[in-house]
Image: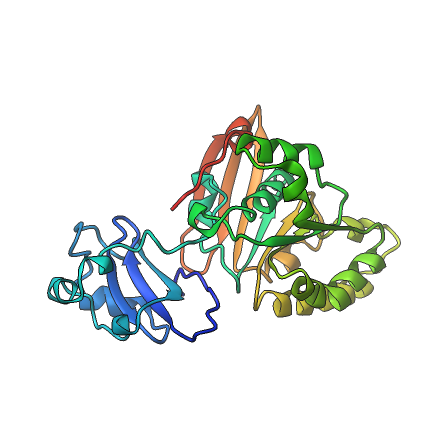
Length: 310
C-alpha cells in the first residue's frame, strides 16, 4: 500500500501525485491509484533528481492538480522541461503531522481514511499534541479543522493543551473551542456514544480528526463478561470504520487490557510507547508499508516546542 494523503476536492480534479520524499521531486501524476512498484520500475528504482533509491523514498498524495498534469507516465526530465518549473517540487502539497519527527516517520500517512493506534502512558500526551496540531493551517502541517475528542479514561489535560497553544502563539481559548470533548464514565455510555453518535457528530462538527482517548478504559470492569465486551467492541469497530472514511482516526490505549490486540487489529498503523528514566521508546509494530522501527527520545522533547514538518 502507498503512503498518501487524501484530500477531498469538490471540483473533481484530484490527482495522485507520486514524488521522492528525499528531495520532493515529482515523479509521476495519474488519475487512479496504482502500485508504487510500477513507478519505481519505470524509473529504474532511483529518483533521477537526487539519485536516492525509491523503495523507501516514494510517497503519493491525492491532491488538487492542474488538468495538464493528468496521466503523465512517468515524469521524466524531458517531461518536466516541457511542463515547466512548477512541476518540480511537491513541498507545496500539505499533509498532517505531529511536528515531531520521531513519531511522524512512523505514523505517516496521517490522513483521512487511516486509523492509528498508540499504546502506553505517553499516548495521552500524543493525543493532546494531535488535537493541537490539527488547529494549524494546512501549509504548517495541520488540518485547519475542528477535532472530536472522546475521552474514554478521563485523561484529557487542558493545562497541557493550553501550554502547547501558547508555545506557538495561539490563543488557548480559541483553540480549545475547536476541540469538542466528550467524556464517558461507563462501558455502555462509551459504546453508545461511539456506535450511535460518532459518525453524525463528526459530520456536524466538520472534524477531520477524531481522537478516541483510552478506548478500553471502561472495559476493565471485573464483572464484564468477555462475550458482552466483544459484542460492544464490534459495534465500536463498525462505527470507527464508517467515520474514518472522511476523517483521520487516532486511538490511544493507555493501560494494558486483554482486548488491546483486538483494537490494534482494526488499525492501519500501531505504535507502542514505553518509558524509563525520562526516555520514551517508540516501537512501530504495524504499518501498511513500513518495516518494524524503533526510536528513542526524551519526554521533554515531545512536550517541547513543536514545529511544522513538510
